[in-house]
Image (tube, rainbow, N blue to C red; front, side, top):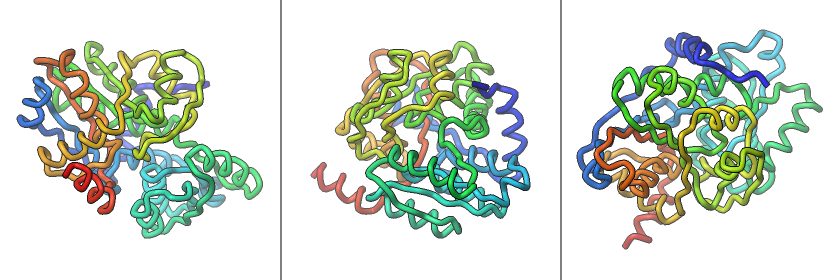
Length: 320
């Protein structure tokens, strides 16, 4: 297994620079008061698809050879990865098929179609889609793009961690959401290289803890996916992100569905940004770890902002 390196992140940065701008890193005194720490938010929800995944998508498509471009790409996604592939495929004129689970976020599915990719639905969760995609790719000669075990995606994700350390070199803690783990692995590659003292903490939903349990037990473990946070909902893990996280991630915690819901509303209230459940996971973790984080300079990765109007309405109704 060939793991990506910091050199790959540097190359990814050069590759994506003509297509994507750095995202903001803002300090929020209101959130700082809530956590009793100096809270900064890395706004990956400001990307063109409103999620960090587009960095990896562009890096991957830019490096495809002409034969693979002609064949086309197929991948499985609950939403944001699919949008990143569709966005990058349009940039580089590559045919893309995105396979999503039945009941997937309709706004994300429509966004993928709007960018010119074909959307298919199968199964009940991401891993049903992944199994289907692997078979279709073999039969139809398409290039199978793994959303986790693709070094170019991980390296692309690492570029936002470079921005964090360059903008805030004395950051003490970075908290990053984990679904499949490509984002967290990218953060590990870049942040630890630039600032070996920074503490990296992953966070996943307790209702979908496959990556967390696998990291804890140092072996691949499948687990239930009962979370409403589609960006965190993976039933099984990926080898490359797990290998990097086991080496470089300092801690990993779980948050409940209730904690995620509260964090979404708190993030919207204090940052005035729309945020999906996965994007609010870092804030949920910070609130849970407030005793550990007290007085520290903490960066929360707002990994995505693709919440639907109906999801937001339901959250507000529950609160009241």
